[in-house]
Length: 234
Image (cartoon, rainbow, N blue to C red):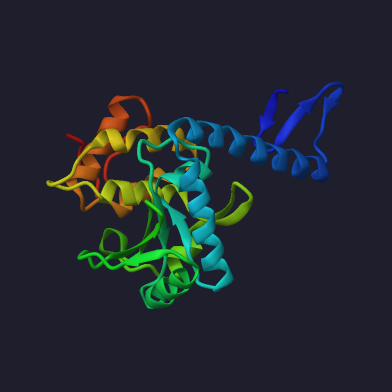
């Protein structure tokens, strides 16, 4: 069945452009798209991580703790591809203690690692990161405003925007870690959902991010366009 635009398909005998058809088709597409991603994750053995993700999200929702899904499963939720297989939730720093207490009560094992920007919870041997200061920036209400509600299996939850996922990925590159292969699947699969001008502005202080954006141009993924300051690309 040909896709006319996201959520609208062409039926035999004509096009369905009515609002109720668009909603019905979009819901069907969401279910089939997540089913496809579930099958892919099952092949990699990630289905148990999806179950853990849902359990953590359910506890956070029931406890009314604001959160957003990040990391590779946020990429999957947007319909993209990632070379990582991790479960990351973003929460505010002031909610860390309460989140750990609620998850501990729900049967999760909790841990405060030496790193001061996240805490961890474990469901058996499956680990979930609760991040309150990604890329050296505290999670705030503004962070949660830059989300999209997506279905993750049977649970709808706020998911970090594709643009912010790309920003976080680029600002994770440094002289100690600069694996561009980790960012290419995200950039390629979600390029039409990413505000690349905003990405350039928010990462302009990073030479590693600039190098990655130049690489995307050379690979014909997205045009570079140059940094906001007007400096010529190398």
